[in-house]
Amino acid sequence: MTDPGAALTTPDFVVLGMISRGASSGYEIKKWVATSIRFFWTISEAQIYPSLERLERAALVASRPAPNGRRRRRAFELTPAGRRVLHDWLVRAEPMPFELRDVALVRLFFADSLSRPEARALLDAVRRRSEARIAALQAIEPTAGPAQTDGDHPRLTLRMGVAFHQAMIGVCDAFEREADPSAG
Amino acid sequence: MTDPGAALTTPDFVVLGMISRGASSGYEIKKWVATSIRFFWTISEAQIYPSLERLERAALVASRPAPNGRRRRRAFELTPAGRRVLHDWLVRAEPMPFELRDVALVRLFFADSLSRPEARALLDAVRRRSEARIAALQAIEPTAGPAQTDGDHPRLTLRMGVAFHQAMIGVCDAFEREADPSAG
DNA sequence: GAAGCCATGTAATTGGTTACATGATTAG
DNA sequence: CTAATCATGTAACCAATTACATGGCTTC
Image (tube, rainbow over all chains, first blue to last red; front, side, top):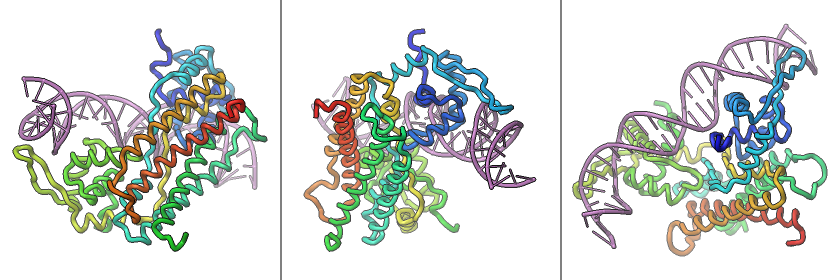
């Protein structure tokens, strides 16, 4: 075949990527996603298990039975081809659209029709949401241990999440100060 | 019925909201979305026209034929009920999950397996993307004219977009400096 | 012995996009 | 006279979620 990674979708690469980082079972992939990339990508079992099948048929991952007692379990690892395909995807130059889908911002956009206190309440809700999200992100602290100076990309993406929401909070505060200078 | 806004989806409220801001036709809603909220919400004709039908059946909008010459056109406006439903939605206290879906961050997350220059190239791509997005946002400048001190929420959401991406750029820069202190 | 977690998997539905069809008008 | 824009609409398709089904193990 010309390009074994051509038919794969982003969820497939996520599965591949998590296995490359050491996740072995479908269940583990799900949990790892939930404690790492969930803030910018989600995935459900209904995607993971069929994806694992496809990846194995394409010989990008290999599985062996690895039961815990009588509880069945399949352990996966990358094949050399899988590692190559993942690498190619990571370095591929292609547009990466920034897709945000945020009801809160939609509501804020339309908030001109609200009264001052109503608009302020909405703005406060947005600020609190960001504060909560920052707390959730900081509770993760990936790759436990003191700052490893080098190449800790999970930490990088975590920081981006925090920076995002700090920025949002900053804009909320600035806007509030403008609308109500007495509180400045 | 108990709550005329209960059955509506977010796209419906977007349609309602755009009409409340003066968009009159389906076509116009589409264009207004494309120059305002598209950075945090999108909508297609295939959603807009059926939505308009639903909203009219629910008596939240009213339409009259308003052809331009022989080119057919339906002009919409909010009914009092529509205005009320929109208002209720805007002030409703309900969770507003921040949903980001970003392949770029996924790729960055997995970038530990890349070589230094490869990881750097990816980081640069992310930074350039944010720069481009900031430029696109600043090209919009909504509610043309000099800063209207008060209640300009479209401008608020615009600023959030800019602040977001400035924050991302900041994190990119910081990370790069850490990984390669010689460039500091 | 019940609740919760480990573990795999599928069916049905949802929500949305893409692509198309149609046709009038305006700008170059 | 052609391309772009105005304008409305539908059909087919796709990605992803929700909800469920099954069953073993662990903890209280």
